[in-house]
Picture 1 (cartoon, rainbow, N blue to C red):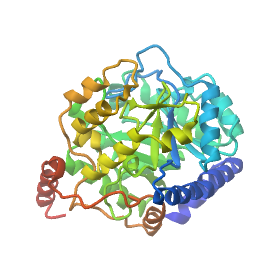
Picture 2 (picture 1 turned 180 degrees about the horizontal axis):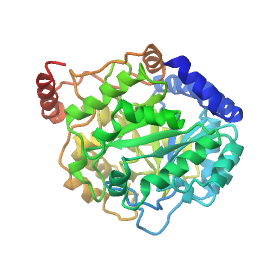
Picture 3 (picture 1 turned 90 degrees about the vertical axis):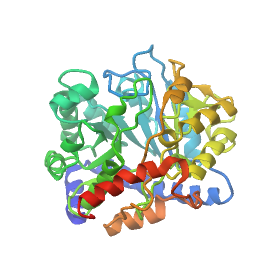
Length: 423
């Protein structure tokens, strides 16, 4: 698997982009995590991976979207984007996730990328706006990988994304990137309407056949103004996603990303560990993209490093989450999220100004934390990499399985295993 994947990448990615990826994401990314670990031992938390939603606007209307895509455009302008990256870079960071809305609607996106050749960017996009010309520009700049979201076949994509011909238009953008030898990934938010379509070996082999280099399986998070609870996965399905990823990592020549588990298969929340935080379109510094509250802003004179490392709000969020669950505190304990925001006087960073009411209307749900049902990594490379650079970093104590209603999450998994003959 690994030799074939390496051969595919070497033969299909522009050498300049590959060098930048290896150096700015690989070598410097590892260095930033090691720096993060040294700081954390002193109680200083500055995330090595910052995610920035550069604007709220989008050309689609996806089910369950928590971003104000239907509101007047709000964006982080070029000067502020540069200031964020420059400050973070001075403190050891070199990798940034770029989100929206749809990032390719930002008028200064390419200027922004071009001004930071010593960094690497992952752009979360629906791919529909990536024309052949834009793909050539991405290749010329050479420091970004588009992660293109595909939510199902033609029928499911139209339903999930709220438009027509979504699948075909997305595939055109994907092909434009691959034709330009850009390292390109495909992401999907696994939910009830697409799990049977996209959680298959055949789907991954289809991506490999197209030339895709990596895939990222998220699990659907029922949050925001239109939750669509019916799309949320059952606990046994969440475990099925994890088992599938672990098995396919040993079998197919495609990189598979997950952000919710360590090498032993234990649940991890990147926000709780402090390895990543999020900056929203209004400039608010948030715990993660789905927690739309902030005390600090990128506009503070002190800069992004001081704002993050000195934030009592973010520190309380990390510590509270780690005390209650290894999973998603928003899904399992929305009451705690609401209490934290109110206790710290955090402002609602949405344009709609209903984030507090949305939390109040949520009912607790299971997340990736399924104690007793861990699925360890099988492939040696992923297991070693996670043990060094993606784990809980010692933030979790001993969590009783009864905490936070978790027994309700575990029971369906046990029942599913029994029905499958104890698998």
